[in-house]
Image (cartoon, rainbow, N blue to C red):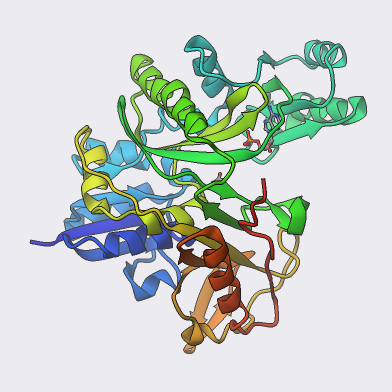
Amino acid sequence: MGKKVLVVGGGGRCHAIVDALSRSPQVEKIFCAPGNAGIAEQAECVAIKDTDVEGLLAFAQKEQVDLTVVGPEAALAVGVVDEFRKAGLLIFGPTKAAARVESSKEFAKSIMQKYSIPTADYRVFEEYEEAAAYVSAHSLPIVLKYDGLAAGKGVVVAESAEEADAALRDMLLDARFGKGRVVVEDFLTGPEFSLMCFTSGEQIWPMPLAQDHKRAYDNDKGPNTGGMGAYTPLPFVTEEDLEYAVEKIMRPMAAAMVAEGVPFHGVLYGGLMKTPEGVKVIEFNARFGDPETEVILPRISSDIYNLFATVAAGGTECEVEWNDKAVVGVVLASKGYPGDYAKGFEIGGLESLEGVKVYHMGTACKEGKLLTAGGRVMIVVAEGENATAARANVYKNIERIECDNLFYRKDIGKNYI
Ligand code: AMP
Ligand code: GLY
C-alpha cells in the first residue's frame, strides 16, 4: 500500500517538501495543513492551522497517515512533535526541548561552549547595568541577541555605543515584554552560508550547501527580509571548509544534543560564517531553512520518504543521494515588502514558464484567478549544469510572469558572497 503523508505548514518551504515527496514512488497521498494555492495542485490542503496541535493530531489519526513532516518553527515550538509521539504517530521534526537549539540563543551558545564548537565568544546578561558596563568596555561593532520569551526583538548588530545602549535598554529595561536575557557576542566577519543536515541522534546526512539572500534589494542593500532568493552549490566554500563544518560543527553538535539528553531528530540547520579564522556558527535552526529548502530539495535524487521515515523513527541507516546540478531560486515579493504592501493583485503567465519550478509562498486562488496574498508571493526555481545556466533560466522565465505589484532581486546567485 502506498504511504499517506501529512505536511504541516504552508509556505514555499512546504511546497518544496510536498514536491519532493510527490517524487517518491512510495507516496500515494499527500495532505498539507494548511497549505496554499500552489500546494493545492500537488496535495490535498486541509484547513488546519500549523499550530493547532489537537486538530493536526485528530486529522492524522482519522486519515491514518503513515508519516507527518513539520515545516515551520512555530509548530515545533507548540510541541506538535511531542504530542504526535505520545500518541504513537511517526513524525519528522525535533521535540520542543530539542527545538530550543533555535528558540533559545543562550541554550545553543552554552552547548557550543561546553563542546568546543566554534562560534563567537559571548556573555549572557540579565541586568542592564552589568550588560552596559561590559558593552562599553568592548570593541565595536558588537552583537546583541535577545533571549526572552517575547519574539521579534531579534538580533542587533550595533555599530555605535549609542545603538548598543538603545538595544540593551530595549531588551533589558522594557517591562512590556517581561524580563529577558541578552546574549552579547563578538562581531564576526565573512560570507554566511547554510549547512542543513538531516539528523537522527548522532547520525547526520548533510545536504548540499546553499546561501540565502536576506536583504530586500540588489547588492545586499535595503532591509532584512525572510529571504529574497537562494542558490546552491556555493563557489566560496572549499572541500576543506565543508569537511570542517561537518566534522567540527554539525556532527559534534548532533552528538552534544544526545549527550545533553535532548537528541535531535529532524533538520539541524547550521547558519555558518566563513571567517578569517575558519568556519564558525552564527546560529542553529531546528528546521528546514527558507528559502534554502526550495533550491536544495530539487537536488535530492534518492527517495525522500525513506529518509524522513528513518529520521522520524530514530533510525541511522539510509541511502541519500544528491545530483550535482546548480539551482537558483528567486523570490517574487509584493512591492513594499518587508514593509506594508497591498494584496489581491492577479498573477498571470505561469503557464508560459518552461523548465522551472514555482513554489508558492503567499498566494490565494479566487474565482479561478491566482492572486498575491502575502509579502513573499512565490519563488521561481531553475536548475542548470552550472550557476550561470541556472540564473539565465530563472530570470528568462520570471520575465514572463505578469503581475503589477511584484519585485525581485536581479543578483541572486551572482557569485555574491
Ligand atoms: P541570527 O538570528 O543569529 O542568525 O542573526 C541574524 C543575522 O545577524 C545573521 O544572519 C548575521 O548576519 C548577523 N549576525 C549574527 N551574529 C553575528 C555575529 N556574531 N557577527 C556578525 N554578524 C552576526
Ligand atoms: N533562511 C534563513 C532561515 O530559514 O532562517
